Figure (tube, one colour):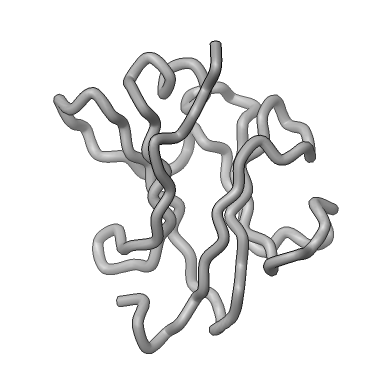
Length: 112
């Protein structure tokens, strides 16, 4: 199965800055969104995937989601970060090999 996100974007989840991961369909969300060993982490932009560089992480299955009848499924990874450039990275099966990533800028004057 070729697994893709339809999009990642920066936004808010109940007025808290967040990264939104949108899975193309509920089938894909079932395949990778609930896998107990898939995880996401925030790193400073350009940092290696070493654990020591992780600023915040979560199992994908534990990310916030909102029930919907839409075919796409959205999950939210909230953050509170100092201003700067970051990357949110998605890892499969508890590895450190980046499956997908999203670069963003944290800016406290604009994030909420």
